[in-house]
Every structure is written in C-alpha cells, then in structure tokens.
Image (cartoon, rainbow, N blue to C red):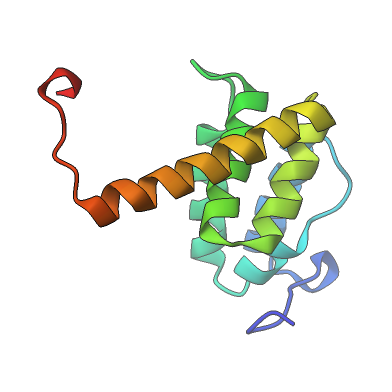
Length: 130
C-alpha cells in the first residue's frame, strides 16, 4: 500500500486531473499507473516529475527503447521492483526482445560486480581515461 494512498482519477483535483490527462494523451493509454496516483498526493511533485520524465524520455540522441533499457538497468541496480516492472513493460512495448533483456541483465550484473571490485581495490583512474 502506498504511504499516503493513491489518488484515483475520479477523486483527483482539477490540477491533478490535468496531469493525468496529459500522461494518458502522451502515452496513448486510458489508465494511470500507481506511481502517478501515489505522487498525486503532492500535486506539485506530480507535475514536476511528469514534466521532467516527459522531457527526458522523449526521443533525442538516444532512442526511446535505449532510454527504457537504461531505466531498467538503473532500476535493477537501485533495487526498485516497481520501476523494474514498469520500464521493462515499456521497453517490451518499444521492441525489447527477451534476448535483449537477458543481455542487458548480464551487462548490469557485470557492471555492478566490476564497480564493486574497482571501489574495493580503490583503483587509481588511468591517465588515458581522463
């Protein structure tokens, strides 16, 4: 259960409904997921977070599938089950195959392992990397 509950569309203030409507229009969907319903308890946070995500996840130098896969990788590393589920579904919808997911998890696992080793051994950064 969300800490402060979930704000359903029918119970939302006009300010929250405006954000919900934009989320549904932008994502071409007819529902609002629980992440947004939880943030709606703080309408300013909801709006700010939606505007930032909408901008950052839009097509750019990285294509939308790549952005979703990066989001999955960070969510796995940070241990956020909700974000893993949400962004894995989004990545699948944008064309991620099971093989791509498995390879992504291999990269995430190796990066986390080698990062911990580099941190533990306090390895000095090579001049060629600077």
